[in-house]
Image 1 (cartoon, one colour):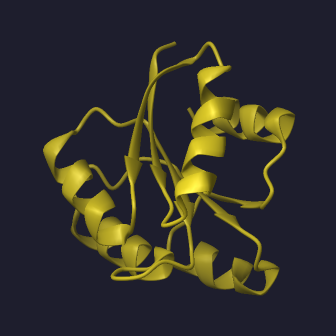
Image 2: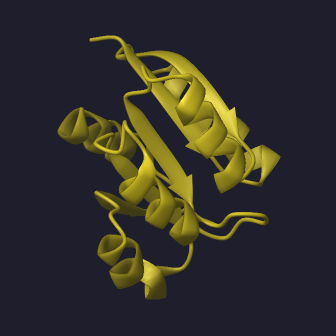
Image 3: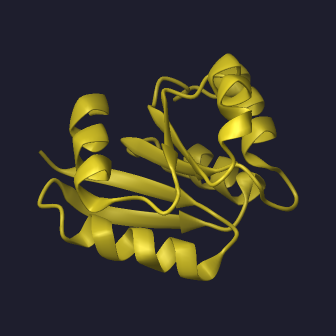
Length: 121
């Protein structure tokens, strides 16, 4: 399986750590990065072949919750699974209410991330 994953996180180090984990997964063949929800929405409009989104909640410009609202209601490819990654467990209900498929607590463990990727793709 050849997967294209979009990482959406305003923190450069978090994006690089996730990218490093994903590169070890043989199913993942391409990794795209976005610094915020607005950047992610632009990338999703331009590239309909993205298979999975890893989404942070706390970001400037368009945060994760606002991204979910826009993505799930207005995008042609809104069926793509979204896994939210956050240190804030208190927003779990909110992310699920707005269309997230799953939730992982940061820091993300490699084996758990791989299991979620397999589950949702």
